[in-house]
Amino acid sequence: MERHFDEELKELNKQLLRMSAFVEEAISRSVKALVERKDDLAREVIKHEEKINILELEIDELCLRLLALYQPEAIDLRFITSVMKINSDLERVADQAVNIAERAQEIIKQPLLKPLIDIPRMAMLAQKMVKDSIDSLVNKDETLARDVCKRDDEVDNLNDQIFRELLTYMMQDPKAVTRAIELILVGRHLERIADHATNIAEDVIYFLKGKTIKHHIED
Image (cartoon, rainbow, N blue to C red; front, side, top):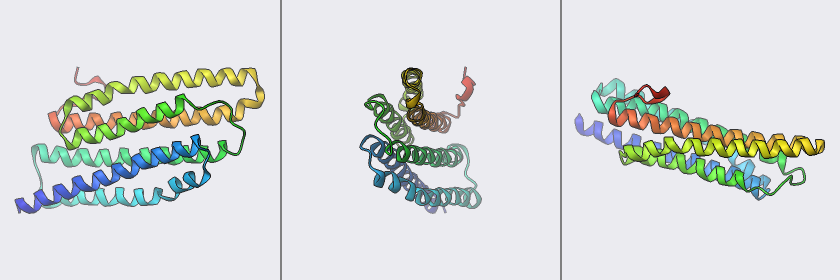
């Protein structure tokens, strides 16, 4: 029975890595669609959302099966319950990537408002946070998980900078308002991706240490 449980835990780990890979690709493609002004890439992101949604359900079902069949305790129980929350956050990251793809479809219909420098940088930071949060789970690396949490402020600051710059564009030229708002929304979606990556990192710390650091409860 224990051998079967270990095998199913490995399968759960494998499925979560698949989910993470799909989500990271969705982020990358959605931002690339925006920067390179490619509607076909945006459509691919939107089209593949269903695949991610189905995988989320499969992972949840596997978690519930493990809980029901094996009634795990201690760290195994924390791992499975953490995976359920992480799985949900990954699906929400994918939703944000779809939102960015939809924004990209609207933005590329209009002339470019300004060179896109900070948004791709912000996307790179957010995507790396997602990757590192999952790596911290796989490698049981508490230090990396805590580092991901710290990086959230960097993304927030960059988003504030983007907002202030675009606000200036809107004040100077009323015709720029629609395009500026679309880019502000992209920044907001990327900020939410970073927030979800932080949630994942916090769940990894709970899994490893049995400590809740959300809302600074650990303090």
